[in-house]
Image 1 (cartoon, rainbow, N blue to C red):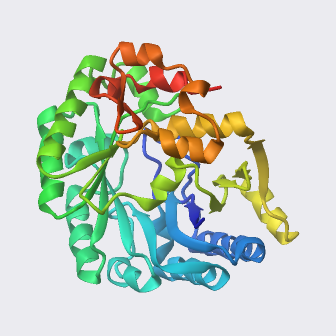
Image 2 (image 1 turned 90 degrees about the vertical axis):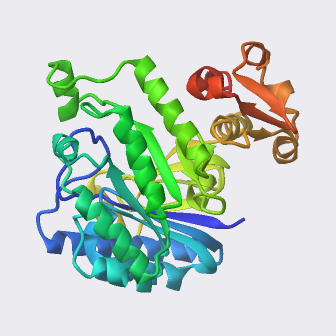
Image 3 (image 1 turned 135 degrees about the vertical axis):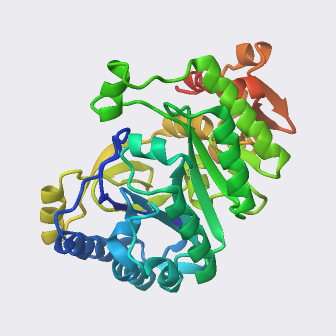
Length: 376
């Protein structure tokens, strides 16, 4: 089976007010270059173990991966292509925060082997963007789309964030329409999740910012989903919409419990039945690589029950749901001998459709109730 590769770039121009990811503002260009030096060391160590495996997806996440510049992206891609058997049709994605790139990145990034871009729009309202402490503008987003297309990258995804303080459903639908008119074929739409110990949490706690109610949030997502369906986007996972043929191959690896390697601090991998997580401390990460040791710890080893749970838990969120035939082929067990979901059929949260267990529209809203019963 083909491998996926995830590369974590922790650098950001500034920290968004809602962000709790492993990211920070680099002190200098030297710090970014040094980090890439160690990433390449890690890639080299892994290539000795898995270099004969075929790779069909590479994903740069963060942080803001585009912040390291074209030269460093190219260095990383060269290390991966040198160390692994990367297939010609590999999907190679770079996350980009418009407005945080060097002037040459859009024009030159295609030459590095990147063929897909994921752009963080969130909203077209620059006033709200400022509230979130994001550094890009709507104008930056439009420029990014145009220049990426001119460079040869036609496979573009855009992120929308719903239920933002001060936003309206009308603007969310307008943003979705605009994304479609720009020829963007993939949209990830997420409701704002408020994490403790973030600036936005304090603002909401102190009532400086007001969130919509759960009912308003649910209606907003329904209306967005219906609108996107009308204009040709299929909801192929709870939070992801795509035109035919533009679904994210890398994301599907996560949902199908396929193997993938992960490079960089705090990066998580799934390989040889193990959930592995790289050291989140930069000092420990560098020291391990200086010793030519892989910089990770095993979080846990999946037994059969874990694998059946994770496979089902992740697949139930997709449009195809859980294939009863594939489940049996993979685990040599009948799905309904393992999981008792009868009450969710009775309550209208799931249905059996062409040999697949799938969420209904009601089930999409209340998927957590089904997911709980998929944990063994």
